[in-house]
Amino acid sequence: MGKEENVIALIAGFMRAKRARMDKLLAGQGIHPAQAPMLFSIFKDNGLTQKQLGEKMHLRPASVTIMLKRLQRAGLIEKTPDTKDLRVFRIYLTEKGKSLKDTVMNAVEAVEQDAVKGLGAEDIAAIRRIMATMRGNLEKASED
Image 1 (spheres, rainbow, N blue to C red):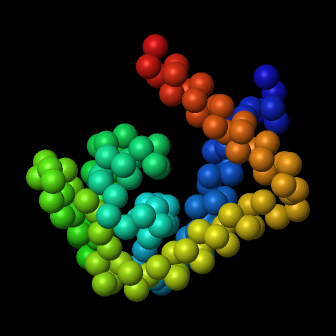
Image 2 (cartoon, rainbow, N blue to C red):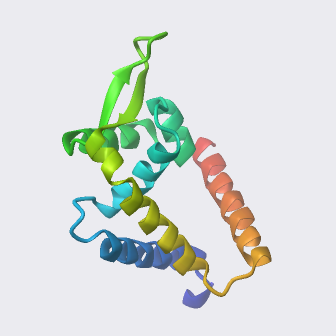
């Protein structure tokens, strides 16, 4: 397979470009670009459990724990024991976290719009389908 056909290299390049764009949009806001997707998920569903958040973001539990600790240290979220099961923690935004909602939501939406500029609805649907299939393939291969 030639370099121009290497799908993984294309995806890696896309992720670098996405991060650079997010860096620019969040510069000076006190938010690390890698935190934006998790904050975005919490903004949309404040009060998720740590497990639900990891499943929603397709992250390993250890990765979720590390990211949440950083957000907690930054004063953006708080972990509260579930009222029905004290072993489970729910993730809530602090006032400081809530104050960043517009900034993060706008940045994530801008990156999405920049990325799909010039693509039609069918192209976007195909990308979603293909990427979901590829992720599933790799997840299945990791289980084998």
